[in-house]
Image (cartoon, rainbow, N blue to C red):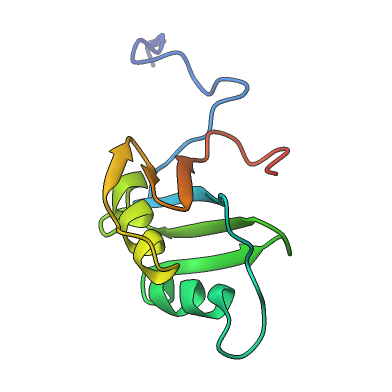
Length: 114
């Protein structure tokens, strides 16, 4: 059998987050207001808002929320708009991923998410 040298691509790279299933991760930082927790809280409202499209949701207990969810339904602006409205904001996009009370970024690594 003849030898074949692979020619399509360079293989997996270090420090690269691969996205192959239309599932993406996002970090939401709540600015200028405090999250509260428990029944009827702001955190519960956010969890309910993203519960249908967020496969995994976690809060750090202060100002951060991580969502791993459906990339067909979620992007940084959609999350910012929805989260802002849940938190009592106007839901208007100020810049990419930024709305009143929230800043949203897409995860680029799973190591050191904070």
